[in-house]
Amino acid sequence: MNLQEFKSLENKNILVTGGAGFIGSNLCETLLNLGATVTCLDNFATGHRHNIQPFLENKNFTLLEGDIRDLNTCHTACQNQDFVLHQAALGSVPRSLADPITSNAVNVGGFLNMLVAARDAKVQRFIYAASSSTYGDHEALPKVEDTIGKPLSPYAITKYVNELYADNFFTSYGLNTIGLRYFNVFGKRQDPNGAYAAVIPLFVKQFMNHESPVINGDGTFSRDFTYIDNVVQMNLRALTTSNTNALNQVYNTAVGDRTTLVQLTSLLKEHLSTYDPKIADIQIVHGPNRQGDIPHSLASVEKAKRLLDYTPSHTIASGIKEAVAWYWENLK
Image (cartoon, rainbow, N blue to C red; front, side, top):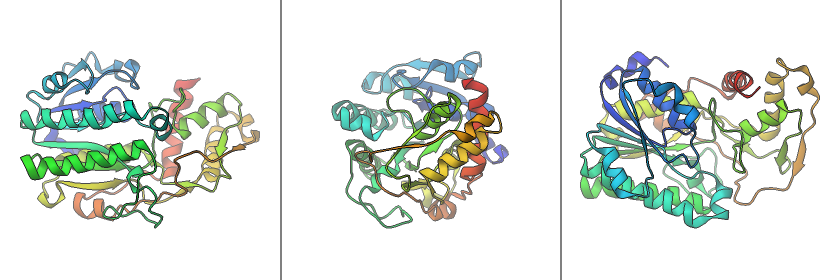
């Protein structure tokens, strides 16, 4: 990805909600490198101060600690912003099954607050994190944006409602939005700890501790694992596209390839064992399938290529190599 393509963002005021989280902090870093003025709104429910620590001395970075469930906070955050990158949410299908009320309050109520605040502040463009979970029980592969199924979890419902609200705010109020349906994002700063840790950082941590990762099911379930740099690129393209036909759409944000969990663990062992040869001999344990999981996920990225000029910079293999190097340096 050539950052020179996005120099139009220099000196722009950009709000990143959830900016202390995994994806949000990577967006903040890239935007600051481009010379943008960045405001990070986060309540640190799932984000971490250490993710944004390097930015706190940057004169172009402002941390606003607050909760998107508070409308006044959202209005304050959106003041004088050119663009909003809305990443704040309670992720995780299992979390939403355990506590659907809080997931709904943050992901739907908080999202609506942000839309209202962005509308009132006359923000030029509102880019938001949508989710591949929206495809639900629709079995056909690859997943194409215009065809979805029935949601399989409260989390999936909340992310679909986001898309409906975003579309309505364009037709009702003229607020330009773009939704990015993230597919299993991984990379630097993704938290390996906690009950709802994503599979790649969790497995990396377990391998590094010489523990056996547990695969849910027989390991044949597959995902379109997407390295963080591809996601950052999609956000930048959504921010800067001059193609008016690309606005007020949703896009798969992925690679367009799928990897089984068995293949994933093999890749992780291969790269981690270059740092610690003992990891190559660690055995994998299989457990029961997880409620709310879909068997397979594979994105078509043709719409993003056509309308946003998107080309993935990283395959899963090149992404895993970079992610493992980062984790080895930061988790030891």
